[in-house]
Image (cartoon, rainbow, N blue to C red; front, top):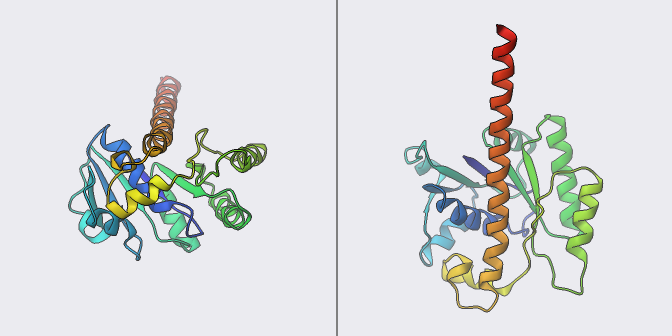
Length: 218
């Protein structure tokens, strides 16, 4: 399985998402995180501590991909349309993080408009950095995206200082000492479970199409 994390805007939790989806998928099968961002944020995260999966740049990764494993790709911020097209075509799911604010949503609209132009629907929007209650920003943005019939994860990622501690210590959030660390990890676990379900449903759909085609042939 290849999961690509991309955004037309920086600061939306792209690397944090890539790190924690890789941590979740490592529990399913051997997982490699490919840091294709010129800022090398994922490699920097890994260098400060210890992660339960390998992190490599795109040049090293080619010779180290396990065909039976998973790959998560952390992409450059603000990819050009041609790059976005290539990313969409070469992955099983494109994850688009966005924070619940106007600037991030404007960038998300541009991304979605381009994905529609190239007729791809293998993407899902992840709302990140959701502020605590009484703010309803996360719920309002999710409802807005659903009304627009855009694919959005049921689970969002809440804003916790534990994620900043994890980045500084080079660890997954579940390994840092913070009262919210486990809750933050549970958010990503639920997103990971949604991804697994999406892939399973897609595999069943492909199998059904193959069976239908075989029946039509005979």
